[in-house]
Length: 248
Image 1 (tube, rainbow, N blue to C red):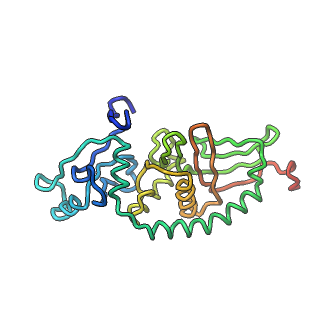
Image 2: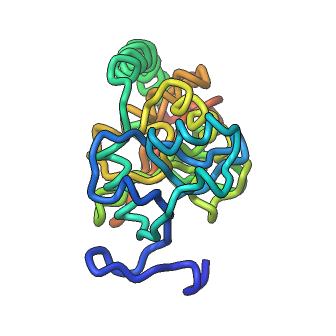
C-alpha cells in the first residue's frame, strides 16, 4: 500500500480510506450494508450504505441514476466508528456462538496444555509461510503444530484485525479466517463480518474460540510481542521429542 492509498483525517491522521452513504454520517442505528462479494471479499473497508439505500437497491435490483446514493470519503477509523454506531447486531446469535464455542474449546484447550506441556517449554516460534508453530526446550524442537492465523490485536490502537484482512500474510495461513466473514454477514454479527474494529482482549479470545469451533480445531494459542498479540488456532499437533518430560 503506497501513500496514494491513504487519506488524511483531522481526528485519526493518515489511514486507509473508506466510502459510506451520506445518511450514515453522524447517524446511529440506520443499518450497515457493504459491497461484500463472498469468499473473495477481503477488503477491510468496503463501500457501505444504510437500510434506506439497501431498500432502494432491492426495488430496482441494481444501482442506477435513480437510486445510487451520494457517498462520502472517510478514513478507516471513522469507517469503523460509523459501522459500530449503525450496525444492527443479532446479539443473541453472537452470544450463542460464544457459548457453544467456549464450551467445546475450553475442554480441548485444557487437554492440549496438559498433554503437550505448552506452558513449560523454553520458547515458541511460528512460521507464517509454513503455517507452523513449534515449541523448543534445550535448543531442540519438542512439539510441532499446524496452525491457521485468526488475527492480531494491536496493544497500541486497541483494535482487532482479522487475518484475512492482513494482506502481508500468505493465503495459506489466513484462508480459513475468511469463512468467518461469511458467517458474520449470514448471522448479522459485526465482529465476524468486519475486518478491523475497536476491541478489548476478551473480544479476541471470543472470536478465536468461534473460529476454533468452526474448524473443529485442537485448540488455540496466543503469541505476544511488544506491539501485537497474534491469535491462532491449532489444527494438528504432535510430539517430536518427549524424553525431557518423562513421557518415555
